[in-house]
Image (cartoon, rainbow, N blue to C red; front, top):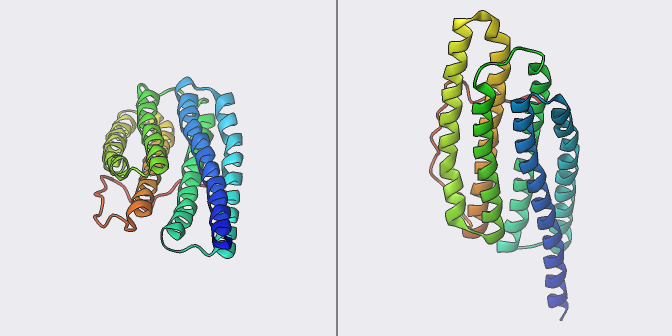
Length: 237
């Protein structure tokens, strides 16, 4: 009976943590959508709301990490249960980073609305963000249902996001070479596209955690990256 009581308590703790993960996921999905929309509509007020909402995502990550640490200390899970706790900590960290990139997109929108628009750029960025948003939705579904096949599909789709980023990078170079007056706006737009590409990488990391959670092993094949500039380039906090 004591063992059953401990297991029920562990299950309750884990369900509470997983509920927070899903809440985080919903907030991050909204952040991706709204930040891209603010750029496309040149809506500085919406961009400001995205920046403010990031505080909720950060707070939830802190709660998940605190709760997971408590579970590790008090319940001392093993095997599959331990994988679950470790995975939720990794997933929350990746979600928080995606939220940061959405916030950074919104920050640059506040600057770009003061400049002449670059034809077609905001629409292309919106399409790229929409793909990452879909990937995030699918990977959260894969997490809930422990669906390895769906997680693998999300992981494969990151290649499409890389291709979209590289196409935009070439376009921005062309705009800058054709007219030096475009340089400042195109540099901001390039960093936005890079932020979205990095969102895709973090969503892919979540997919890999889902695979680890279900199978006990991380994927051992290296994903090819299609990036014309250094991978070390990161968005500002």
